[in-house]
Amino acid sequence: MKTFVLSIVIIFFSGCIENRKDSGKSSDKNNNTVTSGDEDSILGFYTALLDSNNNDDCKLSVKLSKNNNCYNYLLKTNKRNIYGAVTLGTNESGERYVILENIPWAEYQGDTSIDEEIVKTQEIELPKEIIFLYQKDTLRTQNYGNSHNYYIKIGECGAKFIQLVKNKIPNSSS
Image 1 (cartoon, rainbow, N blue to C red):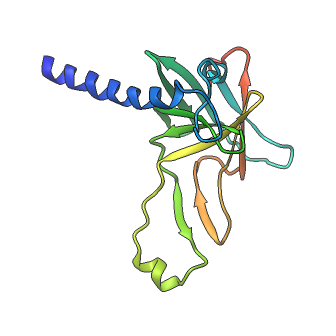
Image 2: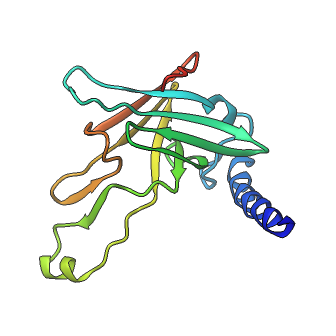
């Protein structure tokens, strides 16, 4: 039993070491990470913000937290709760991003503009991470593509663009 528990602890911390590599460095044009200290401003509880044109009942929330120098998330939808690791960074143009890992997309067909026979013979694996851009306490992602690049990231949400806004006080009912 002790060996099993020790194995679980080692697996958990080995994943955290990878996150620390990304999150502990300074940001520059050649390094896709944020400066130390900036990460903690992203932590908090976020809920979906729907625009006035969207009648979808996209009940979606994300809690970003830090435990033992590891960044984690809890994604809640109306059908499931998913917990996993978070990677933080900054892209070449200076935009900050948050990657929620181990969330299989609902659907993915890849580039559908190529020859249909080739597409039918290929087995396309579902991506397993969702990238959100972070700006001013808001996380944003495009939830689905178009006829040439067909995908749906979160099937429980019909919104094309998902915006999650940081709450000052977490809502215990979400």
